[in-house]
Image: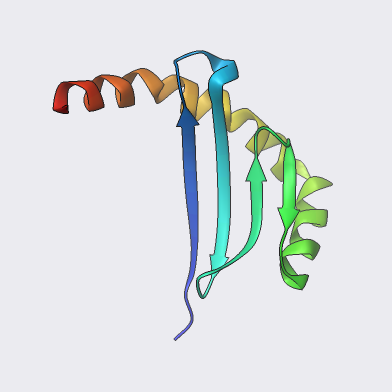
Length: 89
C-alpha cells in the first residue's frame, strides 16, 4: 500500500517567540514532498507534485494559516513541553 503522513514540529532553545521554528512536512511513501517552515514563511516543494502544491498553497489561505501556527501552537505549548521535559530529566 501507499502511505501519506504529516509531521508537525516545534523546535526551540527558549520560550521566546523568536527562538521557535514551526515546521510542517508532508511525506508520501517516506519521501518528503512539501514543507512549510516559519523561518522561510512559505511552502517549499521537493517533488513535481510537491512543487505544484506549494505554489497553490502559497497563493491561498493555507500559507496564512500556517504562518499563525508558530504562535498559536508552538508558543502556546512551549512552556508545557519544557516543564514536562525538565521534570523527567
